[in-house]
Figure 1 (cartoon, rainbow, N blue to C red):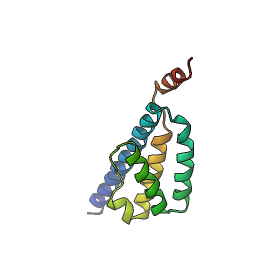
Figure 2: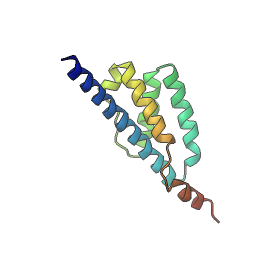
Figure 3: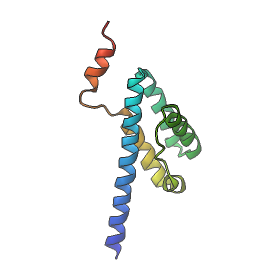
Figure 4: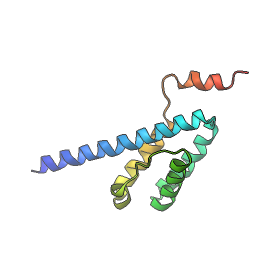
Length: 115
């Protein structure tokens, strides 16, 4: 029985991490398309500060404002709000996705600077 519970928890964690990471990657693409790549680091720093002290309210405020600004779906849910471990998993995965680069992204960013 314990093995089944552990497997369910592990699967839940993978889903939580995946949805947050992909949400961060999607926001990164939107920021690149809007030519706002220079804002990524400041967004990340603010969110990392909130995660460091596990401040759900400040993190969520930033997260929701970003999602609304770019007309994106909010993936942060009740599990992340009610459980600190789930919150931190979501937050750090989201930030990782926001910082990740696609294989052809460098060439796309390089093209932004060509005059």
